[in-house]
Image (cartoon, rainbow, N blue to C red; front, side, top):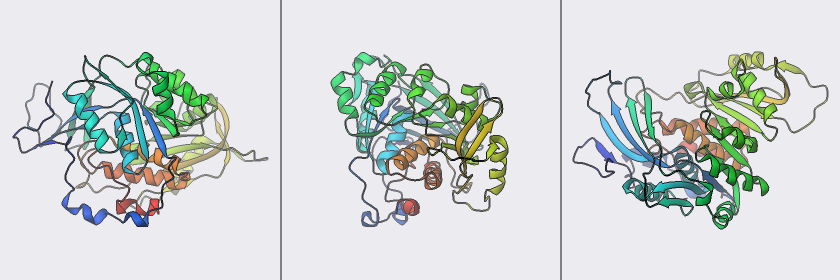
Length: 396
């Protein structure tokens, strides 16, 4: 196993030690006094993956049997849940995590870096044998893409690893519970108990995974990767798939599908009965919203339909509204790495739910946080803190 401690190579940075503030960071800080005070009941419990990321940046993706040099190499904390909770913690929420690691060098470093960001790790199970999860990530400087090679942790987390008293303590006071669909058997137990306590649940649907079909029925909110909605529903189009998800999942208040540099699409269910409301084809509506987007501005924006009956041919109708969010246009010289962009978006959505942000504010806010993440190598180095002035317009 690769050590987490830095070598003498000047291009190798060990990010498990608290990184020094970049020289220009002072320009992006604002006073704590200028921010509204957060309620004490802003606790997020995350259930899922934490790990280690070995990030190798290269001039271009290697060809088979080719030998190349890195332009930089970093070792950082990773895992969908670890990243999302770190983002939420830096934004000011109280965060707790249920996961499993091994008592190895990587595992000890995982705990340290999460604690340094204020994440409560007391519910992480530590095995005396096995290995902690880790991922090799190749960052292509030419195409600004990343390729991930994931090694799961072992032994797997099972429901018996989490006592009833620990589960009760982890859920105590929680405003929302987040799942990335790792450790599916344990996740289902936590979801059942959260639902029994009427604690809302957000599920990050990156891809179809074992146990997803059982877990997703508990979801109040869902954030999905671009391909997931159609893969899960088998609908003919992305907007039709979102309608299908709301029909299949009656608890679901909204579903967001992230589209990278193309922004995101959100379908929000209406809670009000509106008589004689107009019915519209959801695919046609999406097309008209895209035409209304303001592509001339660099900052994230949104466009929204009115509340209407959204029809997906061959699927059915749902009452709600469709929103299209744009991504920030990050200058090419500032775009370093998209690793963790989706996790940071989720972390910002968790913050938005906890602070009752309306969708009109949530979508640009989450896009802004994700864009800041992409300005540094790795999933966590670029995550903004609550005092970052680039977030001031959203948090004031």
